[in-house]
Image (cartoon, rainbow, N blue to C red; front, side, top):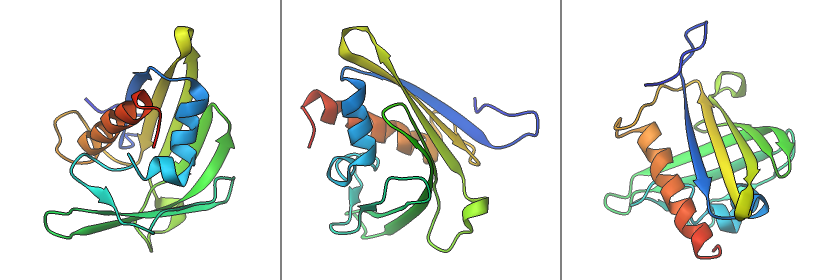
Length: 156
């Protein structure tokens, strides 16, 4: 069930534990080559040459997901609001042309756990989602499965 704030804002969270050190999980979120391998649900791909990161407060990112089955493209852009390596990343998540001040906001918090593991808390404010929605929640959840596989294999 999606979490609701006192104002009724649309939002949801996903928490995962990865068998990888926090620095590696941070790199997966902030390095173009690493992110291109997992910033999409299974069955979708990142269009070659479409990913660009400027990971700093006020910096922008962009990438385009492509469904190889039908060629449908899903361009995505955003602005980094907070970058606190290797523990916190806050950025907007939108389609090109959407106003930055109205875009959903993603917060990723990474916590070190014993034995070289990392807990990731992902929070998306501005979009409803729940397990089984076959939409945004399930898309991110699938992407995190791919991230776990990438981290287990030592990265891209």
